[in-house]
Image 1 (cartoon, rainbow, N blue to C red):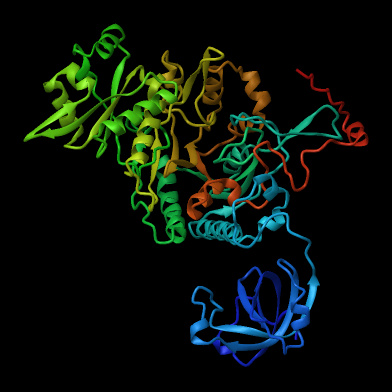
Image 2 (cartoon, rainbow, N blue to C red):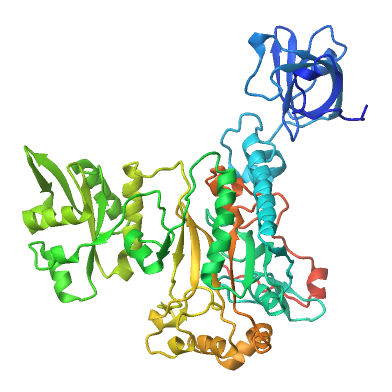
Length: 595
């Protein structure tokens, strides 16, 4: 028999009754039932109940073991009685009667509980992550993550993609976040950068003739932590295709990602045909470029109903500024003054003056609008709003006014708040969509100049002609995102493969041709030697796994994450370098001034 086990702790079944077996694992818990000890023995695969009665030679050792000790157990497999069968365990029809127990490793008193998974301070969980990972839910999440990545690899291979590995030490790239810099010992005073994404390398692979590329790629960005992105590093399914238009990318990737979600959704419905929503429409309907389509609320413009009306606040705004619009946020079933007051109070807590509202109720046979706005604009305009929005008795509507560019985010948050408060959101499904036609440029208010709105390597719609126009902010890009349940899970574009167009695009944000050649010399040179039309995208693996396992935080699907201060409490990183290391790298730290 093997030194440590003949079976795993998930393997034994009724067919094994009468067999002598050997198991090894962790003591999940010990129970004393009238002098008979029951030990739940756990390993990576599952759990088996071990029984040690006072007549067993193993009983004396069994009395000493405690939670999370590692033990070896030899014994006979016996069937449980009908009234003691545990249908919640795969091994629940049998138990192992211990004949010999060997303690392989004793455990000190635990700094956090493993059994039962109660809430526990995150700093303790991260410092003792090796214990935290023994918890059933987290352990299952990590295994599921591995299964999802394996399925992605398999399905990408099935549709003709080949995995290639790109460098980790590279040059700085303008991906929209700070680089992690790595000092060079051989070239003092110079630095490598960890890749924010394999963007330039995968485009160079297309120029080199490696048609359908993909990679499970680590990416590194020195940015502040947030719930849907871990500090420091994250992983993405990165891909690129040659001789394609954006429809080809969508047609290749939509069935793949739908299959991944269907395989791991646990029976929850998954969108069959992903809608393609232009960016401008998404902003106007949902107040976000990553809308949660499980929320049925769609905003509409209702400016005309308030122009020249008796509600002077809105009417005067409309008359004095042609950019002003009034947006309506319809709220089915929200037609009570109490709910409307709660929404108004919430808006004020967000720094807003409030939310105007109308709610409808029947007075006898007549359906009437109620609230201050209804009284001010009159019955005819109130009913016109209700008709436009398809509202009925017991429904409400909220209103946001101003220049849409300044208020759309708040309007989107109000839409989300109303949908959640009224339980309109169907949480037991996965709603996916494409957001398309993103702006190529945006206005940088801080620096008072035009800047790239997204990926600077995207192809602008209209090409060189559009880049030479006077209205740069109207240019759209062949840029697209995939969104699921309010989370951006992928982003991509058709790339610009023309050196002239590349230079012009960067000139519009203040960089010269010399700057382009210096910062993106590899890509710029490559485009002059026969570059195929190409495009691709990247899926955020961490976010996809988080959605599929129902986790609320990315730390619940990652092996050894940092905390919210970007510290690895387990390994003690970041840490100070030794003087010898700094001398070798020709680096002298500058002490931070204390406030």
